[in-house]
Image (cartoon, rainbow, N blue to C red):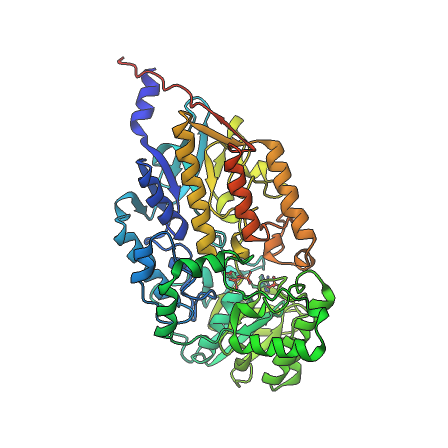
Length: 548
Ligand code: NA7
């Protein structure tokens, strides 16, 4: 008993531990405080902000509009905020999150520069024992992983990176002081969202830019501009109604979804709708027709339209051809750009086909493909993330019987509602695999999760209980549901990170739940039915402290 008491004294004891201080972790802390819980947030970065703390590459910008990409839990906060652009750039969002941390006095319970290495469920105490990578231990009844969907950088499995003598950057861990590429020879690998945003900015600075493209990306102009004060005033006059309209869309953002199928329109009608939405820019293009992600024939009409737009902009026909995506439109995440395709008309930008001629190795001076060698001063890895599961599996999480999350998810992630994992009591994931998350506007998705988790903890405590865990049948049924919905769409037809296909060896499972409104309805139904699919039980009795 003495030993037990000593160990417990050494551990810092909390009611709840939250891992991560981005949009999810900050609001989670606020809600936990509202339950009068002693909560602690551990954040690996040296500042709050999560995604917006790390992703500082040139041109980094949100592609959800500013009036929507913000918290709605505080009417005062959303009324006070003056956004400056249609889409906020990374520094503005980071300033906003810092403001939130100050405004709600969150910092005193956040520890920065602390990476959680392990979290083990102790069946005797019914608590989570958490260890940081500096070996500090703490315990808590509740553990919330607010570690983000796109926070574990994916580095390409290409030989010899250590040989390269120039500078190497990953878009997801960009230096805070920025990088001056003036006059340099720069190579960038990848043409996803991060690359599409950074390439036009870097091309304007660099002497020579080599773009190594494996898969061409669909993109629609973002049409970013200063935010019209009149638009801002109108939204604020009825922010609640504005949010309700967005939350009713399948992606929790205003797509202005057209309920008509593309195939029921004439070619001229289709063209008119695509033209109109092309001019508006951004998300609304995806909302052009209701059948774009369920019918290949309908999808081809959007693909053809976008490929024609590329040919109109890019002067060199071979480059235009190489930039033209062949996969299903929006199957991989489509991008919203500012002058991306125009950039390939610059004399200092060279597009290279890394699919036909894969990068074979890095060399001292640059890299070698199956076709040629390239020398450059700086290398940018715009190669994305081990999405949705990477940041969770990077922590040694162990549930009942010492089973690790890595073992439990060996064949792919399995959750109930994307929030909870069978065998891991009182562990919650914000925007985990099996939740709508990355297919939605992340901020309302996060708020919905955090509200659900906080209400759940409050309800469990109000019942005089201390443990809640998903049952295996409920989890199995949820995984089946997520897969069944995906199978009715074209999403599983391409090698996207939604499927884990971007990380060699990762199990190929479609991870997001498609559709925000039905997801929210199901979460509410689970609560209304007394936490259907969960097992609730009392916490183990606290052992008496021994005196000697
Ligand atoms: P993405 O969208 O995952 O893009 C990564 C890019 O890197 C993509 O074009 C990949 O090609 C490419 N890639 C990855 N590995 C290689 C190798 N080995 N060789 C050549 N090319 C490679 O990441 P982003 O950071 O752009 O965006 C992530 C999300 O952040 C984005 O969707 C937004 O939600 C914000 P591939 O397509 O796999 O052939």
